[in-house]
Length: 143
Image (cartoon, rainbow, N blue to C red):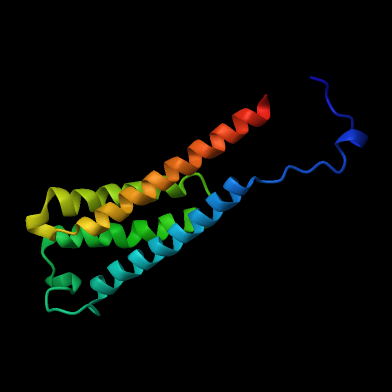
């Protein structure tokens, strides 16, 4: 391969593909959901949630640990996803794993929320699908 001179390289700008643009919007949509989930956990912690046991000092210990952890991690994941940072999906994945363990592993403590776990799995599959499509496009462009 020959290196481009300054004159030849001038005016050539790498444009993101349609899949990359859709992936960026997907990140931001998931970021909004993470922000919403984080706010919902904060609402529970400060006691604006319906029910007598949903204030932090009245919660069982297992809920105190889970709710306070997710109240911090979900907004953190939202900021990383919104900024398209590489650590954003990692923090979201950690939140999804925690909620999956809560609702599938310990339904007697946290209740069963299979729709929430399925939505996390759906988001993870979409993420993998986007990554696969972008990888294939870049590999084809390199040939």
